[in-house]
Amino acid sequence: MPRKLLPKSINLIEPLHPPDDMWSNLSAWVMTVGRVILIFVEVLVIGTFVLRFRVDRQNIDLTNSINDNVSILSRSYYRDNERKFTKMQQLLADIRSLQTNQERNSAFIQHTSSLTPENIQQFGYTYSDHMATLTVHAENLADIADFEKQLKNDSQIAKVVVAITRSSEQDGVMATVSFVDKDYLDIINK
Image (cartoon, rainbow, N blue to C red; front, side, top):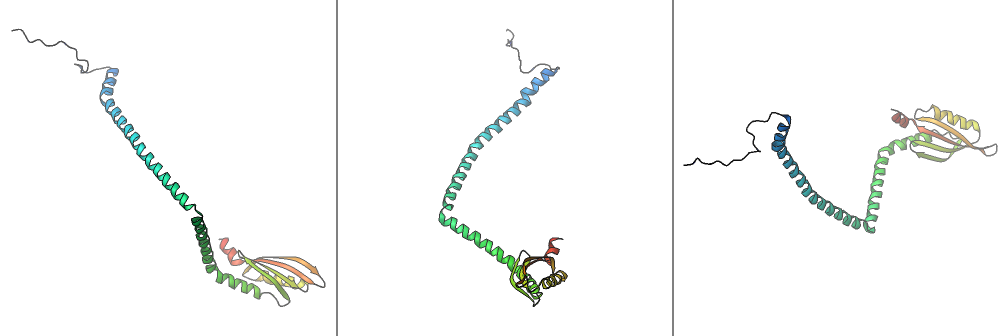
């Protein structure tokens, strides 16, 4: 009986002996590990591409929802209410601020008003941002100078400035006296 005939073929995929040169090692690595990496990257890219469609759809839905809500809120009824609420919040913040500072401010105003001598008449008193401005009238310039000296010597008052606005012998002297609450200066200079 004839010997079983083996088919004659050349196997190019698996060599009979391990390759020794660099190109053979590189091609073997690319065919095994490189192929797995390439498949993983392709799966990742396809997954990202599919996810992009989902995220774009959500983005479009959210944009449409926001635009619908903006059109509702832009109606004059809601816009007017928003202005009212904003003004109310600002008013409440101002009231809260005044409430904490009002006792101290009232005491300062009362103290500075009590420093005005009897020979000087006050025509106006303005107090804002811890700065007071008095409009006063006196018979002569010496009375204004004494008043200025008294204010400069007071422990609660700083930065006294006197400006003569009108002076004549028959009408007397009109002056504007400005000064700052010294406690406030101490706070901001710390």
